Length: 230
Ligand code: FPP
Image (cartoon, rainbow, N blue to C red; front, side):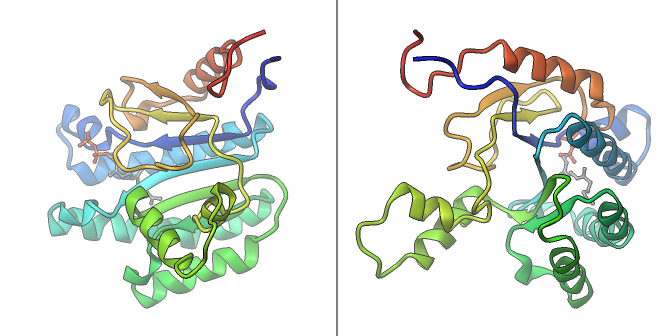
């Protein structure tokens, strides 16, 4: 069997290491998260300018509510600020912005911004930026199974279509920055055949150059999807 085309169409990232980045500089963790937002802008530009259609970022997990209240409210505030600032910016760049996760936990203003992002950017053709916020892979699967309850003969396609990523290609590459070797409940169903890259770089330091190295490595990898090479 001939190998699949070698350029990724979807990259997903677990953005880890903001806290340690700040700690190394004797600064509060919130500064690391603010720096992490700058990296989001940089890496989104890098991904879409390389013609990669989808970028999915893990920003806040269903487990992150267990962090100290000040950090949780800081992250929620940063998220709101991110949406306010970036909806017009992304429209200008022709990028579609989706928020994936349980949005029912958001306050009214954030929910309005999430809806605004959908309404104003849905269908824009320059790329799709998914921000996973209050997202958990298991919760996503439970939600999907519940939405299919009563249906018989459920196929992989049905399940796939019941996920937040409905209609999108599975990630070719999942990157985790920050040196830990875990998937942490991220895109559990969608990452079945993803190439996984664990890098030590802390998220605020992650660069387009490092992204290019990962893409080059991915391009040289023989993805067999459970089959064998020719
Ligand atoms: C992990 O670093 C990162 C997060 C929990 C959140 C990632 C968030 C951002 C990049 C900024 C907020 C996002 C948006 C979209 C506004 P960590 O805190 O676990 O770092 P550590 O492992 O070094 O402690």
